[in-house]
Length: 252
Image (cartoon, rainbow, N blue to C red):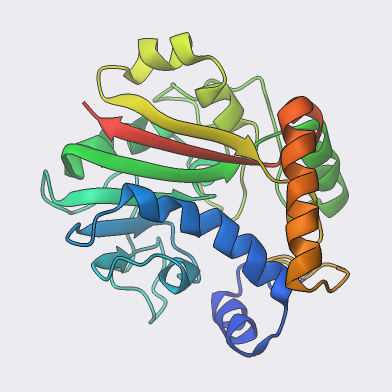
């Protein structure tokens, strides 16, 4: 495994690499968001990392930010738990595989609610901590999963506070699996507008984004066949196979 945290290297590899598997995966992870975004909307991505969202999001008013100083960012050193943006600034906010890296998710939800316009959307692509993903995490030894943490706590972090690359893949499950618990904690801030649990072998055979792993190169036809297999397996046995989750929250 390599390139973890090496954002410039990730951008360089994406630009020159002919890995159709990875580009298919990223297209799946971002393209679905377009139907929740209008052409005139002003958007922000938090925790953008390499900023690959701009390759797939059609809206031209998307600004990318991260808790870093990389030159490709529109906004640098942005802590998604406490930004410097004014209230009611954005029509939508994208958070792609970054919520499970946030030490205090409740602070993140409060802050995104503050800077979103009324009726604005928080568009989330996240991990789904199935048995398959748990095995991958154990083998990769990059992140972790802990179902005993409290994602609504303002005092106890759910992951390491001083390591932005460390994450707790169980957090999205703890936040979104129990709808009544979600509504009890932040139902006054957001309503769930869209949710889909999906993704397995398209992810496992992608070669990785921030980590380089073995993969079998496939053409578009076989990637689509693999995708259909994923849809079948994750619909029948999500807790076993699913590795991804789509969520759209609408500001109340």
